[in-house]
Length: 291
Image (cartoon, rainbow, N blue to C red; front, side):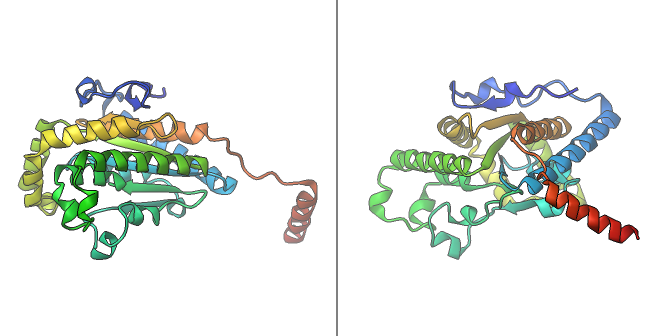
């Protein structure tokens, strides 16, 4: 049975308050066996729909994943999309900007990574870092980003301008056939603490843990405010935010899968139709191969 995902959508039609969105809900699966079966079915369906999108060659899809550290972005992308033809999916993980990237506008490095028609592009973090991390650490504007002082004296104006730029950019993408879906994996502070401890206690996960993770955790409340403001400012019916409860990773992956399937099905797609002349040509090829 399909998952009803309407409760997770934020479209800008009413204010978003994070406290109204739980980080944990009742499981949508019945045990590990059912979870595995349902996830595999989603993988097959996404693969089939993406193949049609590739053949149709009119639309593209951009999936953006934003979350606090340890929310499960990497694992969700890997599990949900593992069954999809790799020719049809491109994943970009945006970490600390390089010197070259910092010498351009704040959306330059993500713009050049947008998906081509027929493909699904996935951003593990994105241009939204510019109103999340940079908002929590505004010194980045005049430091690493080297913006002129006259552009940064009013920080509230900076964030409002960037929200406006992002809304315009996503509207532009939609008008050109790119469907933008933004996932906020809504993790609780306590669950993050437990996952950090697991990274420390599990040798195979030690590499995932960094000192900066603990430092950023101290800014939790500031990040939550930044997320709430960014979602309120950029959620639209055409480019919605999906606020997914993230304390249960299996639940989260199934919900994300359902959203992607629904979005692909909502596109007006079909396989290219073959006219009579082409059908005759194909039949001649078949006759030659058969003989």
